[in-house]
Amino acid sequence: MDLMDAIYHRRAVREFTDEPVDRETVRFVIAAAVQAPSAMNRQPWSFVVVEDQAALERYSSKAKAHLLETVPESTPLGHYRTLLAEPGFHIFYHAPAVIVICATSVEEGTSEDCCLAAENLMLAAHSAGLGTCWIGFARSWLDLAEGRKELGIPAHYVPVAPIAIGHPKGPTPPVPRRHADVLWVGS
Ligand SMILES: Cc1cc2nc3c(=O)[nH]c(=O)nc-3n(C[C@H](O)[C@H](O)[C@H](O)COP(=O)(O)O)c2cc1C
Image 1 (cartoon, rainbow, N blue to C red):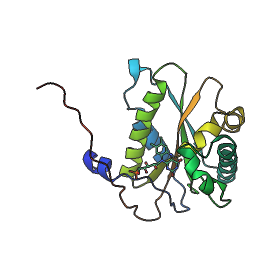
Image 2 (cartoon, rainbow, N blue to C red; image 1 turned 60 degrees about the horizontal axis):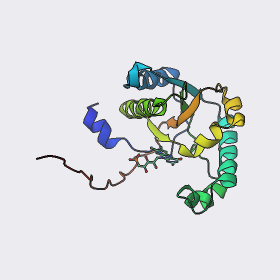
Image 3 (cartoon, protein in one colour; image 1 turned 90 degrees about the horizontal axis):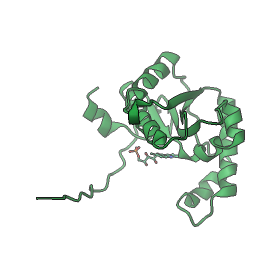
């Protein structure tokens, strides 16, 4: 797939079929993720792949409860409280797999490196006909001792990008972009 085509047509996919993502494809998207640039070429990332549907259901419930306990209504995330309180709302959208990209240290810049890896992963998934959605709702719970224990994330790692991945149920309409605000400096 042409790069610009992937950049312009990747979407946050929130409806998946039940078809599993085969491990070869998971390895393919992770191989693309690690092609991302990283500060001082540290490559400070690690990938946790969760395929167990019962576990994802449990993580969804726990992450929602954690957000409802900790996020005040007045914050931007607080506007999602009604959705988060819905028992049927699954934060991973019943995706067949979730890949959590973790920074392998808390050194400055490691989260940025992981974000670049995440974008590569999402574009590679799109090129393979898969859909992805970055699930920020999961992050704070994954960072708790309970979340780390559930996924086996070491204490010195930082969960940065939980990404749901699967086969899209159908096309996802584009989300309009605002005009880019550009400040030209110089003549
Ligand atoms: C850091 C980050 C966190 C996000 N968290 C969520 C989330 O928790 N749930 C969700 O449905 N989408 C989440 N998204 C997806 C965005 O809502 C989506 O990318 C945005 O609406 C633009 O749509 P597009 O990706 O189709 O262009 C997140 C995206 C980013 C980059």
